[in-house]
Length: 77
Image 1 (cartoon, rainbow, N blue to C red):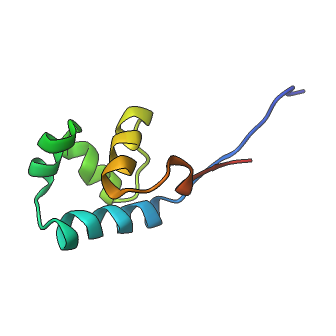
Image 2: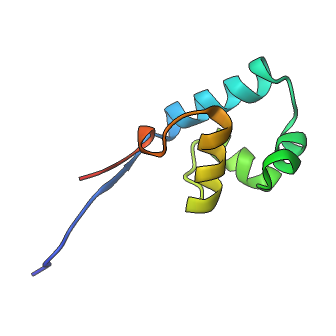
């Protein structure tokens, strides 16, 4: 019997869309340039743009970059 159980719901599709739009349309920069600006690896940015969930520190930096709150793409039930 589990005493505490929770589910984490990741909206990677929406996060990916927001990140790509900000990077490509608003700022017109490549992944490496963004990586250097916010101190997140280009590989992490690529994975995020493909819908994968980043580590918490990278997620916080990327949310700050796209100007969205941390709880916009992750829900805990």
